[in-house]
Image 1 (cartoon, protein in one colour):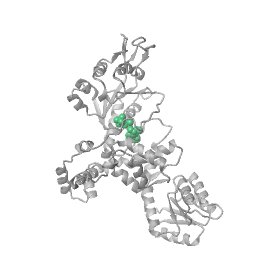
Image 2 (cartoon, rainbow, N blue to C red; image 1 turned 180 degrees about the vertical axis):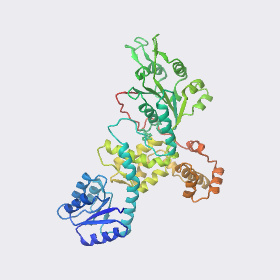
Image 3 (cartoon, rainbow, N blue to C red; image 1 turned 135 degrees about the vertical axis):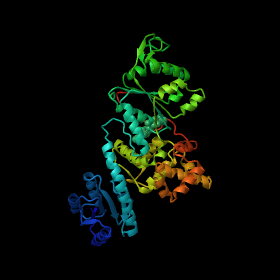
Image 4 (cartoon, protein in one colour; image 1 turned 60 degrees about the horizontal axis):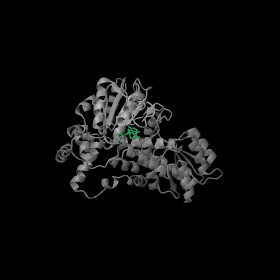
Length: 479
Ligand SMILES: Nc1ncnc2c1ncn2[C@@H]1O[C@H](COP(=O)(O)OP(=O)(O)OP(=O)(O)O)[C@@H](O)[C@H]1O
């Protein structure tokens, strides 16, 4: 089926040349010479694209744009202006025009805009439409956005473990979505109406950990003027997440182990054992096996926790998720700020796809919020995305030139392997390499799927914990 375009312009010569331009590109073309006729035409024809002159007799192009935007939010509009006034251009972009062109129209420029629009419209519309269904602001369940093969495995495990109450250990770099995975387990379980509680083991002072977790009796220590329930008790039959479990002090590790073995604990200053049926999930961005070897983490506790383990993959090993996540965060920001959803230009998307994201999804979320809020236009340019990224701690090191050719080649091959989820055929196509050459290079550089994370992690700075973390808690949640 042909795509439809409506051209609204009062100049006959423009209508005619535009009609030819689109017809030879296999579009169905409809024309109108003024605003009211144009609006009626769009209502009848329902095109995917409108080419709109800003200066029209009677009703101005901006008024037409505003009316069309309100009624057809997904309609793409390219505005044409003979007068290069910044105000009307800015106004048009603010009102959601996809792009603008100046008269006299340069065919090459027009072609480039249409190509960009087609890529954006096809790729992003399909995704944003899918996201429209996923993004429901009144639905408070956690939304995990992904289409990558690696995350499908995670989703499967979440589905399987959520039906039971087994202990789950979630491992992964900072910002990979470990807490979101824990929430998904809880909210997909039969106990989703019970509380979800977070015990952040890294931020608590040693002496406070025990009373925070188990609670205390009145008079247990100076300042204990009342009896207080700890997080375990507050969790009831719900789920308690031990975030950054690797940071738990050794003394508390043995107390937690005792609880895991018996299901019972005692409040600080108390003597009555209390039974808890809370579901335990632990998360860590540290290598627990290494901590065990170094004597910093109890081996028996480690095995108690890892009944089921889930590995949250770093974003750079599932680059196919980047467009979807970026669109999701733009949409979320627009909803939170009651503004229009910004879109990524293909060039901006390319930049995001080639970046390594050492701070993972949290970093991408922060960059997209910054882009959405600071971008003056509805379509984010590469330059703008670059400016928003540039404050990221590792951007410079990602783009530095102080590396040998071999290092660059290794990095590039690894990046393409990652983005194709280690599918060798697709990687060969993209690299323009034969399969034996690719295999030889992989051998030379020691690239194997399981090494993907290790080989990169060493060079990357970690995002500081807490940046961009949501602080709003739902009624059933306790932090
Ligand atoms: N698949 C996803 N879809 C949408 N948002 C996601 C996804 N994964 C993570 N996020 C978002 O990214 C941010 C970081 O996620 P989260 O806090 O779960 O990471 P984390 O691994 O627990 O980080 P840390 O180790 O620093 O505690 C959150 O705002 C979260 O909502």
